[in-house]
Image (cartoon, rainbow, N blue to C red; front, top):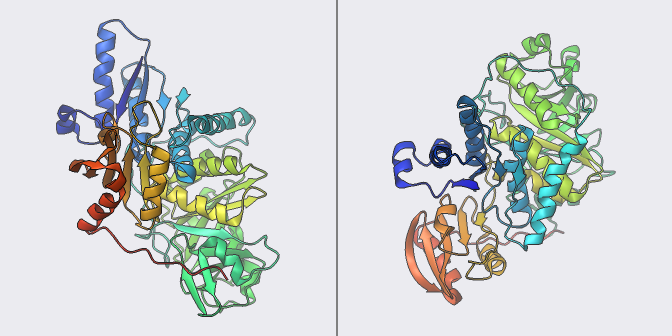
Amino acid sequence: MRIGTNHGSLSDRILSRYGDTPLGMVESALEFLRICEDHNFYNIVISMKASNTRVMVQAYRLLVAKMIETSRNYPLHLGVTEAGDGEDGRIKSAVGIGTLLEDGLGDTIRVSLTEEPEFEIPVARELAERYSKRKGHKHIPPFNGKLPYDPYEYERHETHEVINLGGHHTPRVIADLSMKEEITPASLFAVGYNYSVPLDKWNLTDLAVDYLFLGDKSINFEIPGTLGLIYNSQVWAKNPNQDRAYPLFCGEEYFKTADRSRVLNFVAVDITVLTEDFISKIKNETAVCLVLDSFNTHTLAELRRMAIELRTKDCELPIIIKCNYKDLSAEQFQLYSSTDLGGLLLDGFGDGIWIKQKDCVSARECNSTAFGVLQASRTRISKTEYISCPSCGRTLFDLQETTQKIRERTDHLKGIKIGIMGCIVNGPGEMADADYGYVGTGPGKISLYKGKEVVKKNVTSETAVNELINLIRENGDWVEKVEQLKEI
């Protein structure tokens, strides 16, 4: 039997005592577990599902801790509930499920997509089969001290502010163009910057990166005012006065030269460089951002080990999390990078992310994945979030078609969460994290929600999307869609 606790369906009694929290989810599950045990029934699997990946990961971790305290050891069924469809659904599922698999938790997996059921299994299989290739990975030094952060509650690691990195700033995104033969204005289209020749104007999308890594390449055109450039240190030293350009050093190289930027230097380190002596030397530098780099097949664990080392040594320099991939399918790239980066972001580590990939996906897909991971981990919001359920026998309308209709009308509402639920049975509870809800309540009938409260009942399905838009307008969350400049 599965005991399934859902973030949005906690009883009033649990809510009054524990609130809408991971602890409340765990206590709810333990209540039912004790009932089963009182009747000598132990053939149980437990799930802690939420559409919010932070809540989901914390709830499973906390459940395991409680089971260890009480000498219990029941298997876990992992899933991010109502993950949505397409890229967003896959990334969100990988961030939640993948993080827990990296923790060594989980016995069964359910990937919940608003798509045909046969598309869910390949995603789940890809997430699980990654670990069949993990044997023999490069050794990662064990950490034997007290963990310097709380794995059961999200708190971002405090770092110093260096320009727009660290401090109160949202995580930055670095795009890697170092392997391109030539970099032109058209090269920036894939990373969120469109240039109009007739208007002589750059147009920024919501997925515009913050920095470009150029390596030894150069740019001979004027860049957008919000964009920074990163060069290998020797190349940067030849033109140190270039506007918004910064050097990248490799570990100890930073200390061996006087050619440094006065405002921002990126220093790449791997786990072998990050010694106690190195940390003590660099942690008091005021114009440094560390780039944590890993080529280990157990990427997340090695990067987490490095971040823990910095935190235990009271190093508050901002850090970029850099992951490296090559020769992967598009789906493998999306799921692996979402797991590796998402897990670290959920633990509060990372003032920026940098994905370097070769022969995996296009630059546009890589960039979209980077922003999708930040969205799924709720560390940087760049688009609308859709909490939509998979089809089942209770669904009262075409979920895929309706989700697409709502997405077409609302995908510019940055930061708004919209729940699209097929029935009244689980819908209101499972979309409890949403700002607005669209729930099937009968054949051809829809109820609309603001938060957890129903505000319009029995709206006809023909007019329900328009009514949803009107509801968003009435609550002051609507903005008009601005047409983007076309790529030229």
